[in-house]
Image 1 (tube, rainbow over the protein chains, first blue to last red):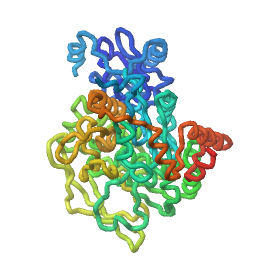
Image 2 (tube, each protein chain N blue to C red):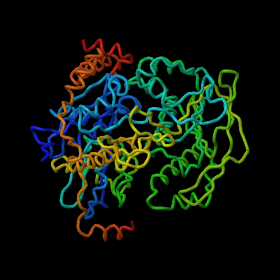
Image 3 (spheres, each protein chain N blue to C red):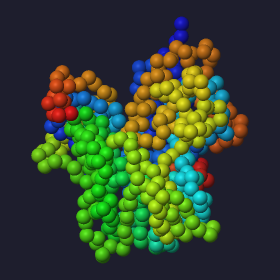
Length: 101
Length: 460
């Protein structure tokens, strides 16, 4: 059981999720956020916060997004923690409407 | 010019309540770029509020939020003053004199009532009592729950209702390696309950639990979830609600209920957990003890997302000897602090406490359930506390009234003069270590102390 950030976060990085993370388990790079599975407590508070529904919990991960389980686990620990909301990436709003949200 | 917030003149803040919102408020203050000293007051000898005594024992992963609170508590700016009740052991006025600001994060400790005849019959309980009891909260240690009946009824379909129903649905083997209190495990081991009825006043599209909580009912060792397929037929308004892309959680919940409704009931399992919709309690009937629950069928009216349930007059009866209500929580007023009777919260604007005329009350702030009502999960309180602390820090120049504040020292003087035994964080860590040690032989993460005297004896 794990909670992950997937494809839709790429080029958006809205970071609404980090404001409700009880354990500060989100990390970031220039493209998107990642969840550190060793820190995340699977509370699912972040899931409804994402404006592009990029976050899934274990039993709900669509098959075509399963690769993100490994990517989150690998990338998160070495990247800086995102504890406070940041500005979305440039073009995030356009990407959001492209994604149909 | 004010020097408040500098190393020589740190901002002194008292936080009332050491649950998640108290800790997140402390964290936000400590991480701010001004110098602070934070004193967190707690009524019990143990900190962490509902993470310790609300989060269900079989949700150990969620309880790991405590790891972060332990890091916050390790900051030199943080001080815990536990086993102290604000309002009796120390007054709010005392805190205003000793500190520049007070943040009330004392949660919602009381339950909303059903408001139906028979509510006070023996066997009619609040979810709070039961949750506190199985989690070893000293306030509820000696409550008695008669689980010798076949049928239990839970009124409400939120996460707390789900917790209560799941604990009743599980086997002892599913619970014995959690940190459930020993007295509760012993009573649950003797439980005769075969049917658990979870009653929602609205439909399956409006149930307010998280998909994750609901999914667990499909994975129980000796209990089948039961949902009637005819209950899955939605009115057009509810269908509209589920079509809304942002309402994805409700769609997931509905889909899970549908999945349950299509399942064949596993006859090898002893217990059944029924989810019933569009019903509300009309009367609890019995001769001193609860014997049956009269439920009234409801209809929905109103636009999508604003649908409310109304009784249709049609009733059904359910023979049951034990009922738990879980239809919402209310805060408890503190003397000297404004309180909104209808909402059961402290009135506020973004965390700044306001009086009855909507004027901001200086020095007073609030966060968590007592600020916004009992909604959201642990992490929701982080954003809530950050907002409050943001306002407090904006007000810093107003908080400096020129008088010298002595912070914790002043509080200790008052407590000592009254011979009140207070507990600090290092003493709590002793209790914590002992609890973990007690759990080890049983394969439990901890065996909690459930009486305050026991906790205090460990610290001596």
